[in-house]
Length: 412
Ligand SMILES: [Zn+2]
Image (tube, rainbow, N blue to C red):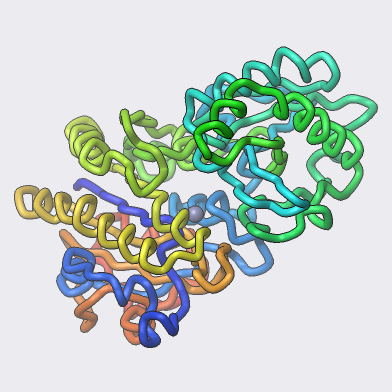
């Protein structure tokens, strides 16, 4: 049996006035996801356990089948695993965004989707300058997403570093950032680090060139999402499966690495609307020749939601449906011993431009999946099936298995 998970990051939403009371998924033209719901079953699941932050880290851990209440240790530690960075006992990994701060406001948490090449040059400079002043080493990632590993010292113990409250920068778009600066035992160290980065970035040649081209500049580091090394039960042990993960995002590949899955790097996978959809599908289909499980993650619906752009979100969902979901339905026709599951990892609301918890819609079809009455994929239709998986991490345990699924009859 082949198991295929297609994840549209943050595509779930609340009903929108701009869409006549429909959600973005419902307003989008999604014949392929609708077909999955029509052929198989759908329902709601809660990827974010109550009281936990509604992040892609927590949501994707649930989707991969791990209880975030047990496994979660900060997204930066997960991303570090993907980057091949092993964390010592006295080390804490921080996600370090390159952000645009202007007039006291978080103007752009992506620095205008700065390119990986530009950001790489900046991170190199930060290592040359700040690594002498601070107990930190930077590792360059994709676009604006980087990792800083801080060694515990008198200025920041491991516990102090982990316990300091660091706001995810995508939660405070267009807001005054001062109230959201690091707050807690290691705040002095982290705030000094940010100030020092601003000094270095102000005169960096990459920024000079970006400013000249009219693009947003990277004005500061923004540390957040910190955590200690993450350990997960492998897929081999949990399901007796090997598999692969396809994503532009280090966080998602990092969970895969910790789960013993093969992380695939696809050229042109950007984590944005212009991603290499066909390349991602080709990589996943090739992986299915050597593995039984593939997890394909698309970031664009989330990024569009963070911009508060409903038309762009709908476009991202339609691209996901046509260019990611459709080819796997064709695959299912040639390979009936397969199952496909589509879902988001959390809500990302157009209204607030940020993530939210709640029961999100899934749909699955394929070998052994017992059909229900739903005929299209969306929040309203999924709710009407009555199927609700409160412990969202159990969804995949229903999806993977030898016995036919009957989600509707087994609420929990
Ligand atoms: Zn997400």
